[in-house]
Image 1: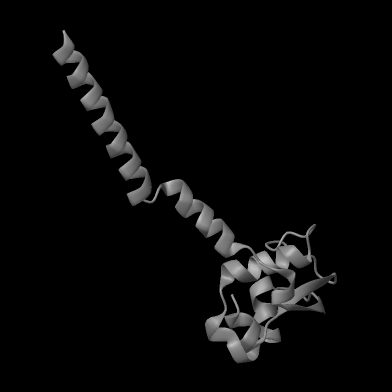
Image 2: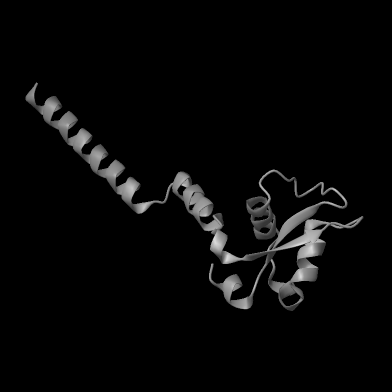
Length: 115
């Protein structure tokens, strides 16, 4: 009777050590999601805003490309949309109203690489 108790206790200890090792050694999918969320967060100090009156057929991307001609190859669409939403919290970046003034992000080389 004593042997099964010791064997069961040994099994529980080995299982606990294995579980602790797995928690420490492996990255969980939840921690990766949290890291991605934090890396996508935009600080208001990372760009300047420029008020622009929207013309027919203008899009957020086309206006940002006009405002930032020197860094067109390095622009990230996801970041542009996040910055636009941050500057215009009540506006939908996918349906701009012609004739309305919106604030668009103006990036500089140093601000672009500070992220």
